[in-house]
Length: 175
Image 1 (cartoon, one colour):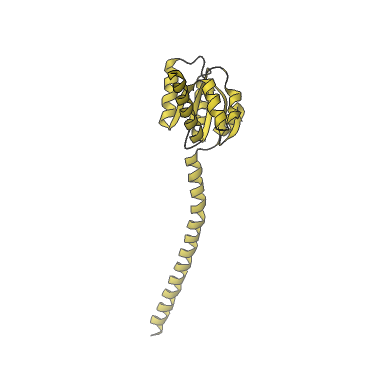
Image 2 (cartoon, rainbow, N blue to C red):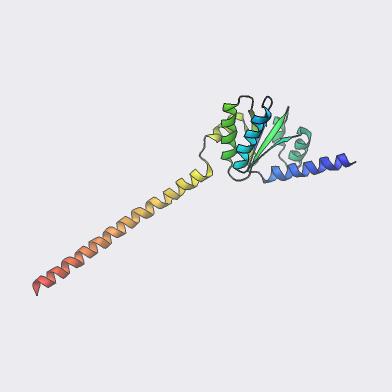
């Protein structure tokens, strides 16, 4: 009886993780050493990404209850899930980079805002700039017209000051 309650609790925790994550990336970690797994977890944790080995059956139940059963296609064999809560690009970038360095890790697929992604889709997503870079570029786009307008206004003010100075000098010379 207690075992059933434990499983129900695990399903609830999985549902919480699945529902709050902006990006969910399913990986196959077969062949990774404990040291490699720890290194991967640490690099993800620094960026606020949770990485957990999951039970497929319980994850299928949680995903189905949330209407995310599309990820069940990738729930075969050993699966670890990376949950990204802030920036959806950073976790994928980290996993793709780690997979390049450690061929044992493979990306199975993922879910971005309830849209299913295959391995190729994840790799394309990893090539996008991070949220911070996009925000900086957007801010730069807003600043450019403002600084241009400021230069124009300063030019007009300078012109007015020069004109007033010329009028003043002309009046002083006329006296």
